[in-house]
Image (cartoon, rainbow, N blue to C red; front, side, top):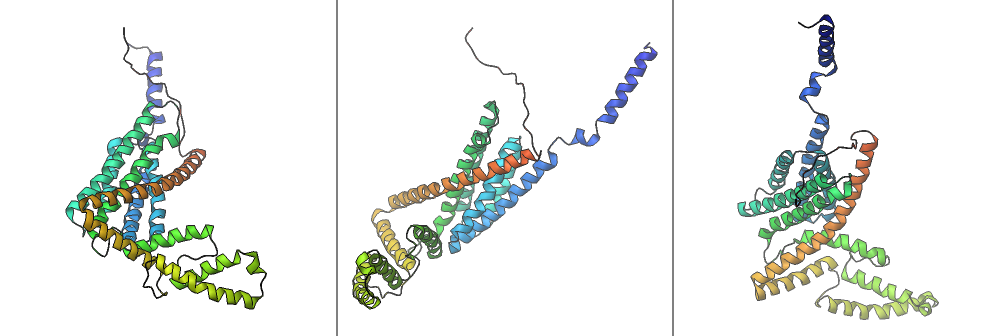
Length: 338
């Protein structure tokens, strides 16, 4: 029979085990609510991306679409490093894919299936690659761990957008609508204006000719030292020459009041339709490749910025003790020759 001392020790141990371990900690692991919050935010961010993508394809709001991608990528990276279960992450990705497709429910089923499969495939590939780095690395390196998932997710989004837009292609709308082209042109002209602040490229043909004429003349010391009346005379005599030359470059038969974006769109549209009729399916393949490579290059800048934003937020969460880095001793098998 156990002695009184043994009974006392057992009683103390039993009492300590029951009192020191709350039931909630047994049923819910550490980070239970935090990981659920990350899942919910990731799903909500996919709603924003889907909506912004649909608006971009209709109106050309490229800036809004780009901005919506940042929180989606940041939360995707947090899903990778904080959600340990790949199965759980896969279920979240399935839900995100369904949400993206829901904004294009009127499209053909084959395009929806292809676009959704492309996005899901590349997203899962990024998850697997990132998680393999996490499992095989000794130290925690956030940028290294999340780099594959950033790249693959951007690739999936680019393919998703291209595939969804394919059925919209017709003689008046070659892979990009006039509104979408106008949005991209406004964005590109804003970048060009940083190098040439005197010239507003997002204007009419006549206005652009005036600004080019003024830009060329004001760069001359001789012109700058002339009286105002002489400057006006030279400007008035030079403007028709530059205006005619600009109209010839843009295709001729222009009245001058056309917007530059509309003129460029018509030039590109006519060229693409001509190439499509001449080369058929090979042109389609080449055009998809060009659009993909261009979008993927722009996407590289987006994911780099998103990675830096995610890193700053990650460091902030570590400082707030939202998450912590701990050391683990791991027993590992290896294959060697005897």
